[in-house]
Length: 158
Ligand code: SF4
Picture 1 (cartoon, rainbow, N blue to C red):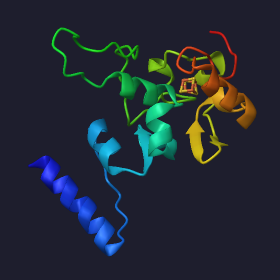
Picture 2: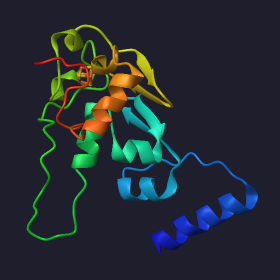
Picture 3: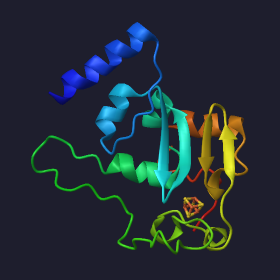
């Protein structure tokens, strides 16, 4: 039933040249529906990118954790480890600096005090200190190296 409704939405979009803002926690559905993706954390958009780019190379640590948290259909794989810890923030009194820092597996000292600004990288945008000085050339080298998820993009060690 869900897939029929989603496909109907896509048909209507193409027939009437519509634009949708589609909000979901189901990343498989987002991948099926979206041409551009925005990820929100505590009320802020922390990453925005073309859908194919986002799903192949998520940048923000929260986006990476979201994609790691997708349950696979194979029995026995268990619950995915997201490295996010259990420090849930209070949205009424958010943490200082980057509001994601108490849960971030890539946190650096600056994150605890200074809120990150949006950084444009090609057609994508990310709010994270790790990407502030990354040139497009370095970004494409990181992508080509195939070690995207293991290489710290700014070369910063924790
Ligand atoms: S700014 Fe720091 S704490 Fe926030 S997502 Fe980036 S690395 Fe993590």
